[in-house]
Image 1 (tube, rainbow, N blue to C red):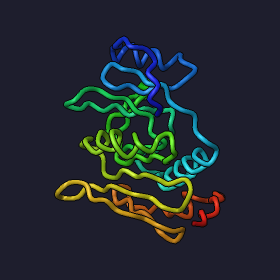
Image 2: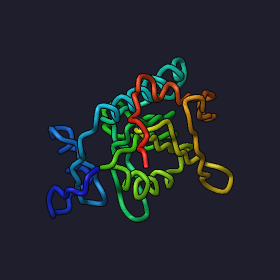
Image 3: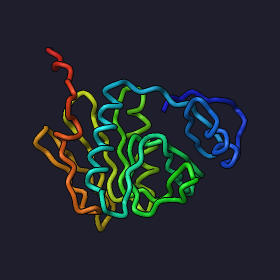
Image 4: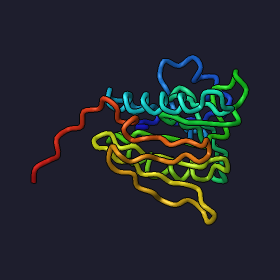
Length: 195
């Protein structure tokens, strides 16, 4: 998400949802303020696509479903209402088919890039972790095989680090693992910087 404010008038959630259905561009919504989203690089989209395919394969025959970045998450927070477009999300209690958003994701995945890192690691993380349904929030690096996870535990969310193509992320909520080798399949990482 960029910090590009679309206008300086507050709009209602219904105006936002209706506008997104006809808009040629995606926008995120923060308590009445609408922000235009930045485009993504090919590597960003490839990693998000790999995550979606991997989850879809593991969810065959199960009630849970993955959704791509065209489906918003609605966050009803004490600080206000937000709508975000995560790169990938998974829910076991989907909203009605005609909705353009989900309320109860159990897994949210954001692929990090320079233009989204600050929001994904900050305000979005805080918002997603406030969702009662959320089990795991994953921040996926795009320049190396590294995923930072936040997993719900008995005393709140615990930070986890998954590094290298041999690592695998346990998704107990669906009884499956998500291997980093699948997330990063066919991704060519840039050479490390020499200092």
